[in-house]
Image (cartoon, rainbow over all chains, first blue to last red):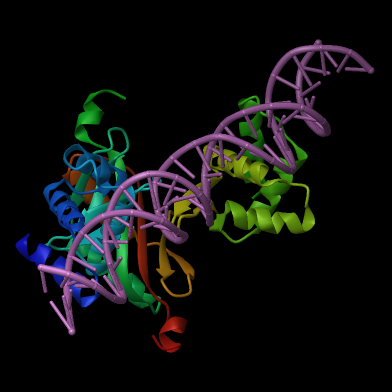
Length: 145
Length: 145
DNA sequence: GTTATTTTGAAAACCAATTTCAAGTAGCGA
DNA sequence: TCGCTACTTGAAATTGGTTTTCAAAATAAC
């Protein structure tokens, strides 16, 4: 946590960018929040306490987060880009309920390994991957239908 | 092939929709082409032989394709929706070159099975999934970086 | 053929993402 | 501290793909 703030500040100065009040506020809020936020989600949250901060600033700051590695972009097919704060933990994938939209994170090294194999088998050097499983969660199964 | 055309016609009449010259042309072209076409790709291809057909018609027709199950939508994160014609074959996933954009299809039953396991482990009923591996293909590796 | 309904194509609307620009701010050096 | 320069900000405009609108044209049933 503390070191992600540091990572951000280091990245800024290294790129000749400036540390500003807005960027600090946005970073704090981003780290505090649940993940999988869209630009709009974060903008709306921020607006409650900091009405002055504009959408464009949130957008640009999130982009910097992903450049410096403290956030990753996700894309679940609903037309909105979401940002997820990276953790020291392993890479993970997502299980998404098609009914209620619940998102569960999981990781499975066996799947990761097989992916690596597949890539190699086609002569590819794997850089990243994305796995999403869509289904129906327990709750929604019980709600009938 | 023949039966996918039939599937489409059946769907139309079942929904009270009409069979038109444009829809037939678009279907023919769609089945003839490589997969992973965006609306624009298909529109541009069609325009060569059938300049009269409008973008909106291609868009709407592709939507019907996906409703009746002869096409599936894909989303590789470049901001364009792509349509892939479904085959009788197994489900497959994608290997995508981050440099030249080449798309390779693959399938791996071992991965599929592990996904099923993961879903079950979280109490989910798996409906579908999406797996994309991003990397660098052999060609682009040789082109140096 | 006539009629009711659907479809078409061009243009407009839509919406998230991205850029523009004038005013404001940070950070450096004097 | 002051001044300068470059970067940042927020509002508004723009972009680019998607989706809808609407009047004219085409289809299917009568």
